[in-house]
Length: 458
Image 1 (cartoon, rainbow, N blue to C red):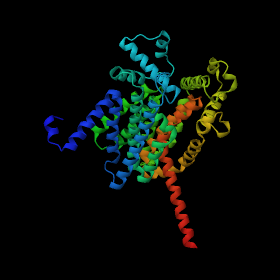
Image 2 (cartoon, rainbow, N blue to C red):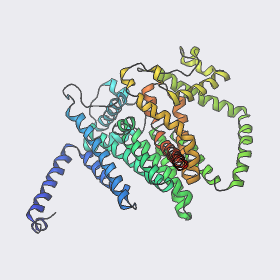
Image 3 (spheres, rainbow, N blue to C red):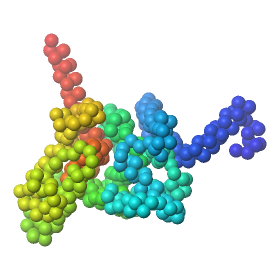
Image 4 (cartoon, rainbow, N blue to C red):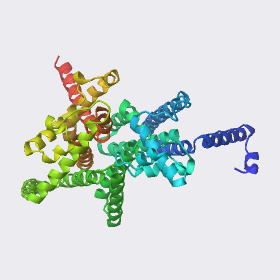
């Protein structure tokens, strides 16, 4: 703003503008990423209420604002109460500390800053490798070492994904389901925690939410040009998901592709019947070929080895392989067909139920019990919600359910650490929660009608 324009303002307004500029300048000097994140927050507050009725717009914007302030307060508290003479930065997860350090080592290598030989080895280690490390390294090359600014950026990405899914669910299921799902995404403790962690989960969630929204828009637009743009955008999103997390491409193909097919068939009963008859025959014929069986076995063995690696890392773990396969990792290559099926079944059960309350081994894990009970409720409501949601919007429901299933399947067969499982289970919950909330709304409506009938009868 020029001096002339400031001079034309009332004195109080001019001082307010100057003070705001000074505050923003100081904040930008301290943490440029936080300033950019705040701009993203302002856009999200506008976006979440766009086109909504006035009362609902005010309500959801206030809820989102509280969620933003809560996250900024936790990040600021971590900065204020951390003894930086003892540790360089605060981290909410052990993986987060390792993640930030690796990105910083990569940035130092790029800038020619000397690092220890051990750090150089770990910087390029295959364990937990992701291209997102290079994104963080590039950001730090521009703004400097910014562990707390990265947390604010992660919060902005997570909240952007939540807003996208809220708007998608709002159009499909109505305001009640959408608001309930939004509250869960914004304030469920485990989701809150990793939403402000400098990990790959926030960008992965954002891209996944965008991909779901783009798939729905692409399926519904009558414009051929928009369909082409949508397909190209989905290809980019699938590549981005794969670059962030191994298996992201498979999740995109199975989750979004399968969901789109089911959503398309839901409006075409004859095609759905033909599809239901032909697909089992096709799958049976495909897996009767030795080459396909060998390839499937290889992928299952690969997943089992990832599980083996998680079991043999520090922390509380769970086992889904036969006991004789744990002493030597190479024994997995000789898994029998029965052992393979037992591994898949146990992995599914553990994904859905772990950690069971009677298996909890620490006080910290005991604090997770209330959220574990909530997870069980979500699972119980999901089947009812799936039926209800299919009746309201089959396409959106099929895509959300398909993507949640694909994410869950990949995590189930590769997990082995309890803490990592809880965090990775949160990758499916943002898509599953809308279906469970639809089921809860339906059951509450049925209960209310039953109560009214009882009162009327009396």
